[in-house]
Length: 601
Image (cartoon, rainbow, N blue to C red; front, top):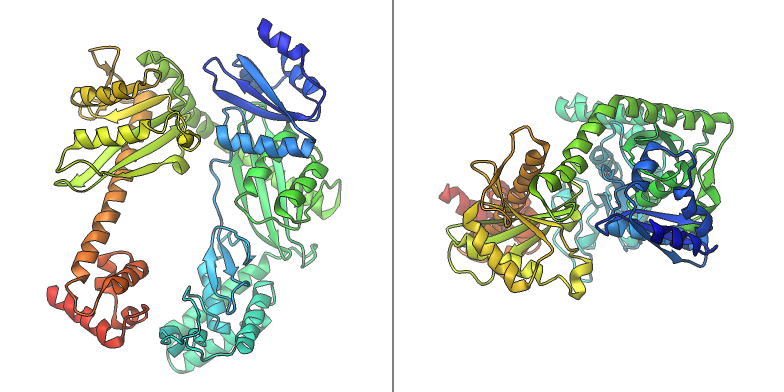
């Protein structure tokens, strides 16, 4: 603590970022400051603090800081460091859902319309779609009403064969050069006006189609039109009459009980309430910093609205500058005191408060199953450090064929799926799981101390599914790599017994013990990930080998079929029209493929 006091005395008055460390040198908190000296000293003064801040301060063993040119640079650096270290006491957007949008490829000569959950430059996006409105239904309406293309077929100088959508009137087949750029552009403009809220033309068209289908006694098609009209009504009913029809805003509210918190976000597009989402939020930050941290992470995955409406403690000017610099878009951050926007903020606050009250037991249980289980695991097994980053490995194959390995990663007891890795076994002949595991670990440990360690962070604990049989095989790899500072345990599936290198005797935990349940979750996830990868490879290899038996199918056509259908089962079930829609597959070849599988069955 004397060292910390000396560091506090030497803190500069500049803006920057400070990084708090625990006794194991893990980053537990990252914060930004307009003035580093004033901000960091506050943590160590005897002033009143929330329970979460007190818990964080009690774990600080050291800190360091980085000076920046401005507060906006500090905000950007703070966000990058939070992504890198996922600190225990920062707000982390773990339970986020990426809602679907309709993407229009406006950079394309003949723009295609598709469903997308990721936003990229060069396209225009409409949405997000939530609250009972299915994005696929909206896309189907667009396709049916305006005949725009919904495929990803490239359009070049050489005309292609029109697909089924052309023949049923769903696409003018620009890929076959049957539609001019001007004519198609008009279709796109009308479709985009509908997606922008002009429903009149589509409503009239659906009513006409419904009547025509009913007269022709095609009642299923008539019912489909009726359902789509009901969906248009659902969209219309969500419009807030007090709001401008051009309003695209997100309304954000943060509620905390000093230990746990929740953030609610209301999505308003074209004056229509699209829906709402609530996120649990554990943080040792101030309320304003917590909301800023949430918004930076949230908008890294979602499209920015024209306006963000928030509570009065939010750093509005700083966020506006950040979004303008980062996303090259002018976003207004409004902190209303009265009027309809203040009422919307109150609605979001009520949603967040209700979520927090109803979810407290669930949040506490989750903490027991994750962070608290990690802390207890260290004590029970005598680990050298808190197992913040845990990695578990598994091998999958059938009789030594298509051998693969998996690595899953859990941070503070929760799955970190972005860090999962898959391995194709390269050097092992036959069904030798021990040797396959050795190869995977050898390749993994080779990343330590290399340029790739940034992507493959050093684990605190490695978990192997197996008992004493695997122990010597894995220890051999650790010894070869000179690894001494990573804990290693073996989970015996049959007896739920845990073995470590430090003891000949296993540790038995009760079936209801949170530590054992956490280890079993990690083990099961590694097994699932390995099996999924194996099935994918095995299916593609089997598909490729079967298709080679069909006359007229070479490498390019196999790849086209695999890209289109993915699995052999789907190709076997496809009809001739669907097969013939694949590039390079003629109607006669489609018939040959269909006949081949019918004879096999």
